[in-house]
Structure formats: structure tokens, C-alpha cells
Image 1 (cartoon, each protein chain N blue to C red):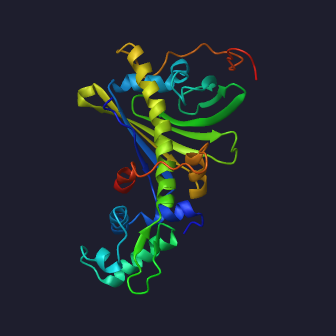
Image 2 (image 1 turned 90 degrees about the vertical axis):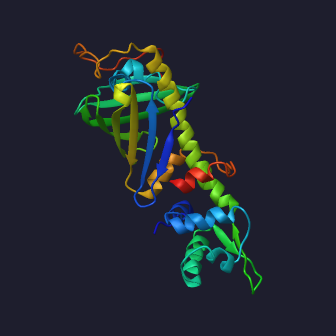
Image 3 (image 1 turned 45 degrees about the vertical axis):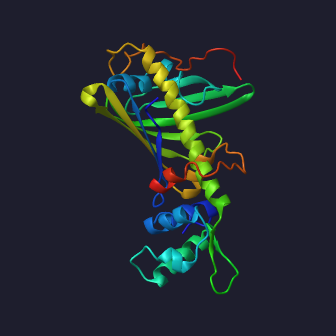
Length: 157
Length: 130
């Protein structure tokens, strides 16, 4: 697979930016974000199932979804602040397990290579470094040591 | 300046010279003089950068009074890289699933789904309730 997921963790403001390209036209990638039955098929890890309680992806709309694995259950909710078809989704994001925490997320869709491919850039901004670290570190077991193989990536950020 | 160690470590690596120092220290410990050699700045400036890295817990200085070799604290760096890598992998897992969804969709679709019939109860549940 040639499309790699790139991550940028900013040190000046508490944001994380993730960039990924897809071998499909922008309208298709956008549709996979707006139609709940499609979103349910890819949002989150494979080991969890998604129930899209609500997914009204339009300006002023909102969403609620629940992820499950056995007895575990994780609920999320947010608002769609701006939805520009084929271009932009601006939304809030809250994990109900951290109800005080909220991220502002901007998803930018860019058409590449004459419309055959798409670049998706997702920027998540929270209101403190502590919150961002909690978001990003969410579920991380302590003491994870993976060596230096990603040092280059970290240093190039 | 943020108080927690991880944020301090990220802030310390916001500077390109300090990133370069860390990259060189992954190879071997080095003295201040050795570290300063390739740069067009004073020993004092490099020493200042090292102090920031030291405060962030990324490096320590040896006890040898003369040389005080600089040592990279691999554990702190590993924690940072593991932290970022895990998040990146979660995103990658999500997007590789999205690849599969896209492959199964027809090529010619509009960006928005057709409008739904208005339902008095937007809760559409499948399967059993928790």
C-alpha cells in the first residue's frame, strides 16, 4: 500500500494533524464521511463495532455513535459546524468518557491528479496540551517502548 | 511552559538545532565540544540548548568533571515516539478500512447521501441495547 498516514504533533499549539491520500475521487471519499452506513464500516479499529445513533452530516447537524467490543462500550458525540460538499467538514468531537474534553476538528478534502485521487488532512485542536496528550495517549498502556524506528519521523515533524 | 514531562519534551524538540543534537546523540554519547563542532555558533549557545534538553529529561550529563559527556535518555524518547506512533497506527487502521469501503463503492457518487425521510425518532438502533 503506497498511501501512508502521516502525523504532525505540534509543539506550539495543542493540535495534531494527520494527512492521508486515497486512490479515489474526492466526492467518493467525502460520501464515505457523510453517509452513516458507510461511516460505520470504517470509523475506529476493526475490533470494535459502530452503532451510528445519529449522523446528520450537514451544517448545523450533529452526531452520536457508540463503539462496542464485548462488554466494553465507548460513546462519542459532536456537532457539524460546517459541511461544504467535496471540500470541508468542521466538527466538534467529545469522548463521553471525558465529557469536559472537546476537540475542534477540520477535515479538508483536496482533489489530486486530475480528480482521480484525494488528500485528506485532519487537524484536531484542543484547549490544552494536557487534553491533547490525553486524547492521543487514550488507551495507551504505560511502559510501551517501541525503540527508535520512528525517530526519523519524529525529528522530521 | 507546560508542567508535564511529555509536553516539556515536545517543546524542547521544537527547535531544529536541538532535534539535530538529539539525532546525533542516538549514535553515541558526546562531549559539549564534540557536539558544538559542526555548528556555526558559540559553545555557550550549544550549552544552552543542552540545558533545555536536560530540563526536559531528554539528556543527562556524565559525572566526569572534565568532559561531562552528554547521554541521551532513550526511555523518554521512546515514550514520545511510542505515544505518537500508536496514535498514527490508530489513524492508519481507520483509513485502511476506509480504503476497503471506497473500493466497494461505485465510482460515480455525489458527496452527500440522498435526504432521508423525516423520522420522529432519530434513534435507529441495531441489535440489542447495552
